[in-house]
Image 1 (tube, rainbow, N blue to C red):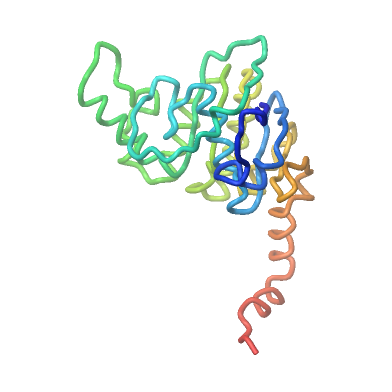
Image 2: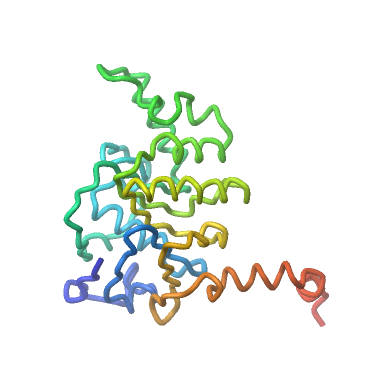
Length: 242
């Protein structure tokens, strides 16, 4: 993807004022898995959202066939980026965003109650209403049943409701789909999900997007420091201010 900088009239207004966007020129994606990571407020979700909308996905998530709108909150960034597509056209695709997944599940139930000539939509998600499962179970049902390979899967913080065990299981599922010609672009805070080996990690910083190894990301370093020095760090975090 490329930011069409000559079309932006003011880099002092949102979303162009975000450091990661202000300094953005071009991002090249790994053919298998690309991670976009960084601290809160750096613009990960805004960037991922713009890619998804520019591709044709509904801003609130789902496949290219979903068109529902609960609360329009997306930025105009998608209007000023260019996506460079490869020669192979994906046959499947999904924009998964944790914050609006409830709205997606509700829309599926509503559409199925209206009825159609085809099978119920929920059959593609395992056959059980996503609202009748725990948050984590419904997330995982989408990854297992709806993602079918030969597609582009854009995912914003998919670990939000997943236990560490389920996050590891998701890596296995990703690997199965990668072998079926799937491509992932994922925004995450989880060092577990970032561990998929055949991938590229962009860490968003005030200076822009920097390519990092897993071990050099702030997420990995902070988790490792905490687990290796829990007592010392808790002492510093909980001590009274002088």
